[in-house]
Image 1 (cartoon, rainbow, N blue to C red):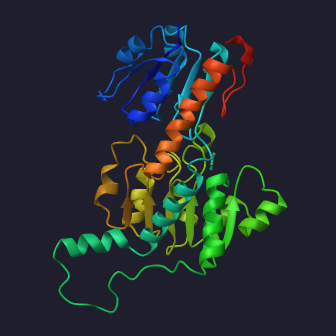
Image 2 (tube, rainbow, N blue to C red):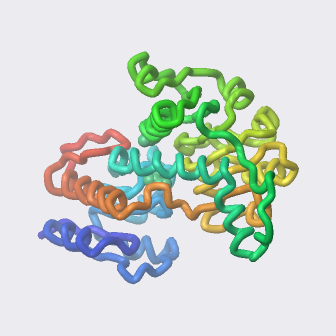
Image 3 (cartoon, rainbow, N blue to C red):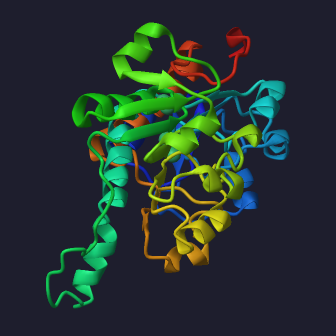
Length: 327
Ligand code: GLV
Ligand code: GLV
């Protein structure tokens, strides 16, 4: 019999078709919002699950689904997985790295530019019919070319943003990361390693691309915002919870920093009410990897991981290590 796989959310029809060539597939193509109880019920008897970043996989769920062998996440971030619990339960987790790197770096740069040059704020002004006369100081923003770009989290996406800034816009790039990059990668990105405090004090634009974990919770809070230049901008394309959104709303309202661009939020899809009312923030609904080609490639990588593991015993992009011959 074919292994049984659950797809928790609506996805490209051709992705369902490619799963059906190998598996007995149950999918939530109607995109109903499942409760934890409904998800648990749907997972009964399934060996694999195609998850998105919103599907929490923890010890209690795993205990209720003893046949489960693999959770394939259609996201590079996998903070929705309790990896230790999965490893203890003998369940493989996989993510979707690499295929989204350049697309996501593009969006990080788009958000930086929209933030620095006040694209959203000025469009709202125009749409509201408030543009009566030109003025010399209308929506003056912050310089991008030649400025100092500070990147916190220098993984593949952070490196992509660094290259765009250094090679495309002549920016001085500084970065902070858990570990320093090797000299060749630093040279390629034209990026200089600094401590977090120096980065916050020096950068004209700070971009956050760190994975979420207990250790990175509120990487940027009131104390860090206070270190930044009053003219600086902050961009978060990493995860909600990396920034203390409440402290950020205060800093934006009081103009302690110039502006922010946010694609991710604490408790999304709800957004801190104060962020919705301050003008100097660009807000997007977690779309940094959203091009058709990239979303297709991320979904296909999740499919390849399911087929790789459940059919051939080897996943392409595992996030934990199991004895892979147990399938
Ligand atoms: C999106 O947030 C991802 O982790 O891929
Ligand atoms: C993280 O995995 C990244 O690609 O930046």
